[in-house]
Length: 233
Image (tube, rainbow, N blue to C red; front, side):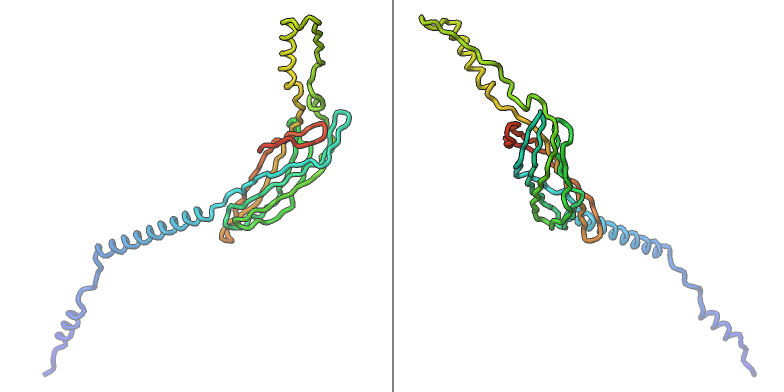
C-alpha cells in the first residue's frame, strides 16, 4: 500500500516556521548608538579645532621704533627739506612664518603727508625679530613761522639810580628773570611717522590669515639744524 504524501507536506510546513521579525527595541538602541557616536565625533572635532586655534591663532606683528635720525637738513625761505632715517624692529609672535608685503613708512607735518616709501617684501620666521632700516629724502615743504624762529620779545632796560634800586625796579628785575627761561626755550618742529606692516600667516600650510600692524611716532626736530630732540610712539 502506498504512503500518503501529506505527512511530508506537514513536516515541511512545520519546519519552515514563522518569519523572524526584529523587535522595535533593538532598532531604537542602534539609532541611539549612532547618535551618541556622531555627537562624540562632533565634540572631538570641535575640541581639536579650538586647541589648534589657541595654539596657532594668528596675531599681528609687534613693532618697536628704536632710533630716528635726520642726517641731512636744509632750510630756506620758510621751507625745510631733509633725509629721514628710522630703525624699527618687527617681531613675529606666531609659530608660522610671516610673509610681509605692501609695507610702508610715511612722514607727515601739520596733518599732511610730506614723504613716504615702500618697504621691500620679505619673510620673518616664527618667533623671530627682523630689523627694518628705512631712509628716504623728504622734499622741501613749508613750515609755520613759529617753528622757524623763537617767540622772543625785546629785552627790557632797567635804569637804577646811584642812590640804590627802588622797590619798583627790584620788582621789574625779578619779573624779567622769571620770564627769561620761557623766552630761552628753543622752537620745536614736530613731524609724525607712520610705519605700517602688512602680511599673511599660513597656519598648518592650509589656512591663510592676513595681519596688519601700525606704529605712529611724534618726533621733535630743531628747525635750526635738524637735530632730533626726542620722539615718542
